[in-house]
Amino acid sequence: MSAAPSLRTAHPTKWLTVTAMLMALNIAMSSFSIPVPGGHLYLNDAVICTAGILLDPFGAFAVGGIGAFLGDFFFYPAPMFVSLATHGLQAVAVSLLAHPRSAARRSRGAAAGVALGILINVAGYSLGRTFVYATAEAALLKLPFQIFQASFGAAVSLVLCLKGGLLRFWDKFSA
Image (tube, rainbow, N blue to C red):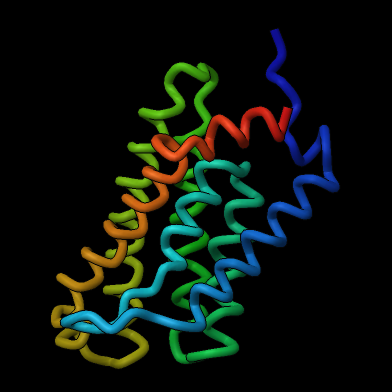
């Protein structure tokens, strides 16, 4: 029994269009923030996790890694390579866990994927801050906020995909 073809192979124009739109949304969400105690809350984490849940690993990497890289490049270039690696790996991990062979396990896989994505995000940015700013203290000071930021984005994406019906819509759209 062979697996169903992916959207990328079955409908490459749809795949490219959705991937490009999510990448543009990631870049746009990188351009502004909501000031909160401890820093600024960016909503691009929600876009990255959503792309991981919906797209295959290659598309998820393009949205998460390349999109975050470009967002940083245009608006705040210092951490752009940290964003490329961290958000790229985060999106791929979410995608791999959110696409089990059984459709019945997809919700659990998505939840496990975004949980792993939180860990990747926090670890990647903590290490990145240590190297970009050459001080572990900067990373430790931002650690609670980084956990909040990553968790908030993951929660928003799960609500949109699982409770908001985006995953059901995506399954019909990509069929």
